[in-house]
Length: 244
Picture 1 (cartoon, rainbow, N blue to C red):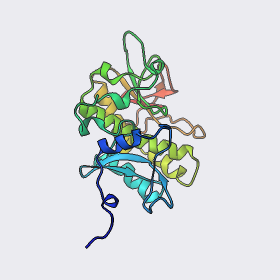
Picture 2 (picture 1 turned 90 degrees about the vertical axis):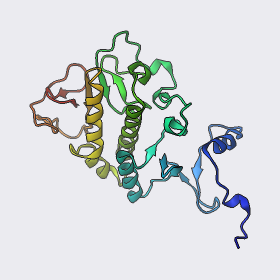
Picture 3 (picture 1 turned 180 degrees about the vertical axis):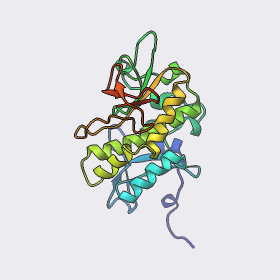
Picture 4 (picture 1 turned 180 degrees about the horizontal axis):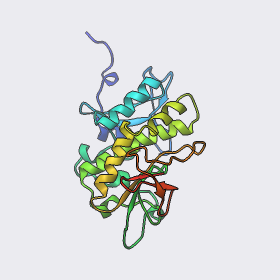
């Protein structure tokens, strides 16, 4: 017979957890996760849905990082970096909310969108205007829920790799190799997003480049000779969405 108090194994829903967290006076407190009753605790690297459950994940160990990034890109882990409810967990939640910036000045106000960029600028939304480079509200593009989820997955996976590279720690080289691999999951997904968005507006996929590395002369995706870019970046491919 289990003699542990009921509260130790009590399950909590997202709604119940949010209600408990909202009772804290200081809403800017960092939320962390502990598996030993609070003796130690780790940051929450990702919030995802796995096997029908919302899971708080710490990915500080290398195997956890690789498994999480792979899981997000494959769809086995459904990550919700901004809104823990997400469109699939609650159909009443605005499906575009996770991709909306907190400040209006960060949003594109161009009257006529001419093109788009897929690029991680350490923001909540990787879809940017090709003219002003500000974020484009996904509702303006009338993106489907499926495409919104694909954008969120790419942003989460690429953002995780980019931050590991910026950290200049033991994962720096590992992260860089995955961001420059043409056939890797994160770039394949990014190029697919650009091609899907290009059905509405011409869309470029901004390739990661370490400034210590030389510029390529040929597209790493299709092998075409690169041309000077129209506006942002240095070079672009005439055949595919590649931009660097």
